[in-house]
Length: 210
Ligand code: URA
Image 1 (tube, rainbow, N blue to C red):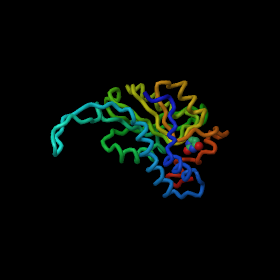
Image 2 (image 1 turned 90 degrees about the vertical axis):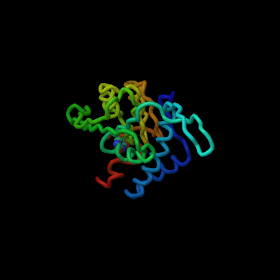
Image 3 (image 1 turned 90 degrees about the horizontal axis):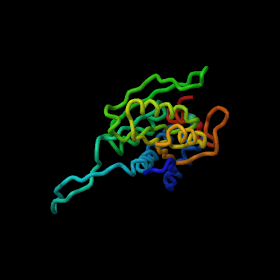
Image 4 (image 1 turned 135 degrees about the vertical axis):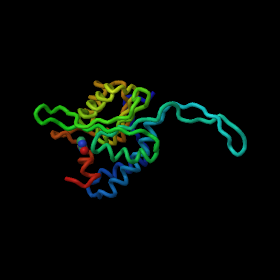
């Protein structure tokens, strides 16, 4: 079983993350690094997928070899920044099913409001990996996971690049059954809900908007 929080301290992950944090890193390089780092993080978050055996013939003889068990896993991207992580993971797991959750923040209530929700069928039979690069306040991640549980998901993991202690705590309270995998837990959130030292706005940095 994955712990509630896994920080992937692999040297390649940490080196790439540092390059992504630097404010002088260009959009193109940021996107390339995000793709590379997402492969390494995906390796960690899929560490305990269930396996089964299948009989195959090698050129030498027959054998019972390991293959992934059960239904194809589901990757669910929280729009829009989740798509940056999604693209890399899909290179590693091209047969994964993909869903999208779109949420915006109501400026009066400050609560996340759903504007898009499309997920694969039979969610209850799949491992569901929710991807969003930044676990900041945790509001949108918790809301997205609420929606996925309502849609039937039972075995959920949350994958991000950077987390704030506040977001990790919020997830632990709201969804103690959902392990979080990240490359780093930073110091804190600032008064605007940004992670410090962080890397800025992940969506803006990967898409060159601002
Ligand atoms: N979203 C971002 O893109 N960056 C943060 O620091 C927090 C939330």
